[in-house]
Length: 377
Image (cartoon, rainbow, N blue to C red; front, side, top):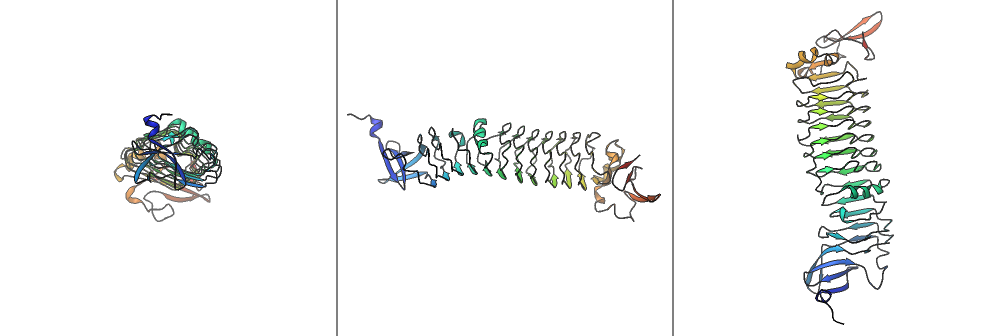
């Protein structure tokens, strides 16, 4: 039997550090495979770290591929690290690895069959497409840690991680420009998120019902729009500082953020949608740096106490007070921050009066509220 030049260049089933490789002598590359004589050679392995290179007979080989079925059926395998040199993963290479919890890969789109009990996933490169996100969502009941900081996406697709309800730690990539519709909606255990400086839009319902979300950090000033219902019912969100550059906050964007306490809006803000901060019952303070009052609707701040101080640029106080809707709020010049409604010696912004045994708060524009914050006509 005469071997072809390609077959002659392969050394089959060389075992190095417990892993089997096919070596291509011609270009010094290696394919991770399994022992042809022992299909179950990896069955008892629990952790595998595939090396970027291996050395055999004084030659260094670069590992570039994981062969078909290489770890198929390895039911005890819990952790697999694939190096960045690998750019091809064979058919069902990790199929049936039902205990696999930790997976680190250079490009998850190479893997067409993912286990459905992953807990910790790191993706170091490539673009994660819709199909790959769909495969990740198979682990929605277990996936708690997802590091996407190395991927090349400029768009997180619609419903990319929808209802990954165990997810509590997430890293997003630099270069990302759009968080699309419901990208992270119903991720009810997500607690903190850093928005990369490159993001220009947070789409509609992106963080809807992320009920444990406590901290949102905005980086940079490229963000322009926060969409409708974007943070709807993020019950644990306490403080939010919208960055400079944002011009629009959509309809019900922060509706029913029950523990939202303090809000800061940038000088760039132009429009705040109807019910954007409605039912934020614990809001105690708001800063608005815009010189021109942003456009709001009659229910933008529905059920928010009208005695809550709203600090605006000193030169714009009268403009805000003259606005039909902003004028219903407790407008205060920014230099007056620190003046409390509880300070009965101050009459600069509001005064407390008692009539017929009832306590009322009277604003400078004549608007009157009872002790519960309800406007008195």
